[in-house]
Image (cartoon, rainbow, N blue to C red):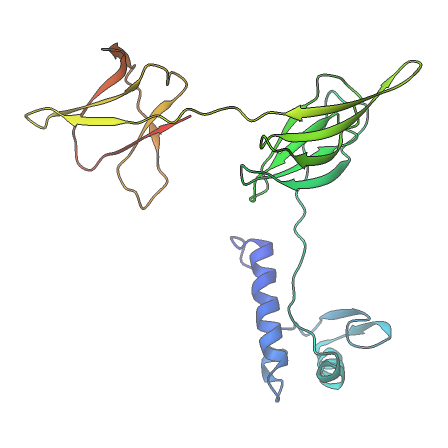
Length: 243
């Protein structure tokens, strides 16, 4: 039985891995442990040229023993679907159209019906960027020599259509160097970075084996053209600047 804390995709991957290993065993004992007595196998041309439903663990094992050696099923995989956010300012619903692996390491897509292009992280988190014009029907993404994302638009306008080439520009990030200086008594530490880094947040973590980064709440003050924060030293402390 699937534990309530198990992720269904992880459970599926584990079962398929066990299933592939069990198929390679000649006696088939490992196979019987993978099926509930009241299991049902919908065979859509997986083992033979017959589309059929096989009911019960004994019948399923019989079919597998009869056909698996010829079909040699393996290298199992499955598709994970990620829902897109609901459109609130577009003419029609989501219509993802075209994918692009961009220089930021994310997957980008054109939402043809949603007047936007979207960014999806490899964990499935989606952020949409709407075009200035509604009903622009963006499509056909490409990465330019400038590393920005370019795409086509077919804008519905009376009496016909306007055709555009559009560009999504990545913000330029200026790296910030964080200077960390303890006082002579090792009671406090002074952290400083350039005054141009006002859009950076200073964060603290006491254990780098975790992701427990928290914002340092001390308000930075400008000292000698540098944004400066003074923090008390207490145990292990690791700092970073996050934009």
